[in-house]
Amino acid sequence: MSTSSATMPDALDASAPGPDRRRLALRPGTWITWGVLAFFLLNLAGVITTVLLDSFGTRWFDSWLPGGWTGHWYSDAWREFSLGRVLGVTLEVTLLVVAISLALGVPAAYALARRDFPGKRALTLLFVLPILVPPIAYGIPLATMLYKVHLAGTLTGVVLANLVPSIPFVVFTMTPFIEQIDPRIEAAARVCGAGTPTVLGRILGPLLVPGMLAAGILVLVRTFGMFELTFLTSGPSSQTLVVTLFSAVNSAGIRSTQSIDAMAVIYTGSMAVLLLIALRFVNPTQLVARSAD
Image 1 (spheres, rainbow, N blue to C red):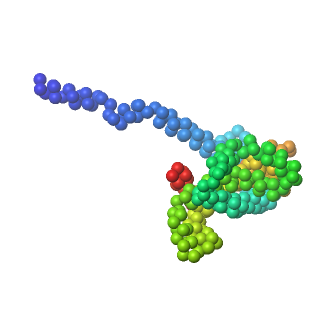
Image 2 (image 1 turned 60 degrees about the horizontal axis):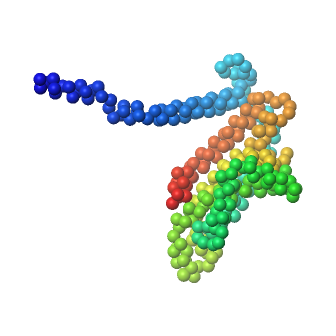
Image 3 (image 1 turned 135 degrees about the horizontal axis):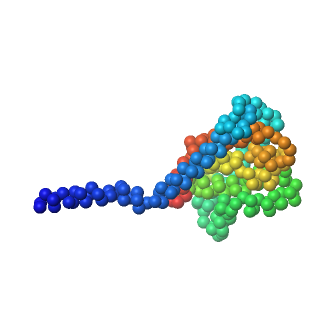
């Protein structure tokens, strides 16, 4: 009797689901989430692989792989779409936007972090709007205004349009970096006789370099891939790489898909390199944590 009673709990324990099994059974959402993520990544990898293979294939119709391999599509795309000039324009626009955004955004971030003044909340809301609102929503009236002053279609117009979301981006990236610097450091430097240029150049400057580097790299990546504002305000001589790619796909005329795919690979590779550089110097979770603090 005692033996059977002793073995019954063991049998019940063996048949009962363990805590790990119960936890997995009670969380079907976890499996659904991982399944959706795997499906998305599989489709993304398929699209990228297809474009990459087609950019090196001679012809590709009804087989799993191209019928032959060649690299001349890249040289054809370089000549046909003037990619040397386009990449130069893209680099020029990107660097100008980064430099001007830092020059204007860092002082604005310092004022928001250190000063209390009437209308501060309204100004903060004004800065956040270009980040939250889709670019196409304010890009059309912005382009209309630039056309009226004869700046649309020029490099200046493209830079001005891209500054609208880039400056607020720098402000909201730099503000947490400035807030974490103790104001007593500046006060102590002024007590010791340091003027404003000395405080900014020798005290605050070195402390703000990591934040400025982070903001600059993020703005660079954002500007390089910005399509809406650049498309609405650029002209034949001021198109960036992403706009040229869109125009090649949708413009009239017969173009080889392999050349377009080659240009798409160049664009995707450039964006991947920029993102890797950005992730090397910037940790997005740290930015979120600092913003939350």
